[in-house]
Image (tube, rainbow, N blue to C red; front, side, top):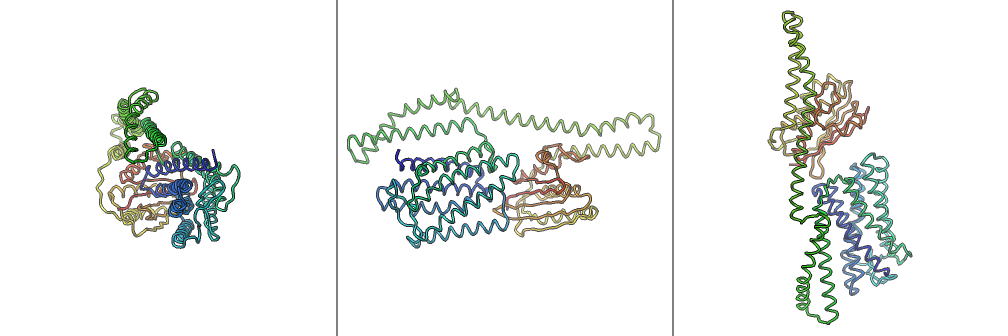
Length: 542
């Protein structure tokens, strides 16, 4: 293969794999900002690869100019800022410095685009011959060196931020960032020699073989998305998806075969009529259709041992069984927890009932009987009510809600408790924090979380409550300076009947999680023993 053929093959693989990766991440949650920006980043890389292919294979200089000038260069200019933005979002950096850096990167990109379109030849020149290439679109003017210089700075800042976050992460998060960092390094190191061709510098072997590193980046990142849930993408890979991919590949190959045979006939017999080409294409498509159906049946039998219709029925039955198993698992967990929590109060009641005939006339026994029995019955009643809230919450009564008002009302209700525990309360609200929600259930959420914070700061401390509106969502942050929660307990805090409190039922946070989920929101906890806990609730705006 020639250098040009290798270059085109590497770019084709880049376009296919990167577009698939971007589409996969975007469709997983189209409303999430990270997914949107990463999809745009992947689209920019895909646009560069596709337009460079068209530039290389252009039939004339004017066509090459068109592809290079209007499509390829704009895609190249957008790659670095969208990569930086994706990294900042994926590692969770959203401070003032980060926002300033992103604004600068996007402003620079807009300036480059304006100079490119309105001052032809100021930054870039028309495609020109290079070593092994008839048209090479990445030709720069004297002032155009600022584009690769800015590209280099933005990419290296993003990689440095990614490396720092990766080195500090633990567990699955570390594995996710590891794949993203090293895959990005491979992709940019592999693709960077392409910039050398801008100045007519050809690096033997590295150009164009280094370019294969870009599809390697896409493949490795896709693996991290599917296997390690990178970007919090939760996907279940089913056989039906594999089937769809196989049949899609088969269909593409089928039409490619038909087109190749038609092209061979046209070359052999020399006809140029469009209508003859369409007629020949249709006849050959009909001729090859039995072949396609035969191969499809072979795929069904080889991979799934059944026709596709039977496979669909099996998958439906399997999904029903999985849902039923999850229900039984939940019922089992609830029953075990309920039995454990009610056992102690029932033991106390049984003991008093045993001694009632013997000591019923004793005033001291009567006083103790009244106090203990009432206390234990109240405990059972509380457990049953919380269990009902967890198992079958009341339907949401949605209405416009100003979250800051709910937070203030709940904090004012707990004013005596905060004074009693010597808690300093700090409030910071975004004025635009209006959502559609159930005020009663949200009040229950905030009350539960505030009480947890007060209990964690028994010796005094600071409770910070804030709201921030960003990207169509309201984030409520509740931060305390209490004793914190150990890492091994963090992942179980929302499990029913899991508690670290001596007198807790373990249902409070489960109910909170259920209410937030019903509001189409998310809740996360971050805690460090001895330093405090931060709870973040993200809710969609009204």
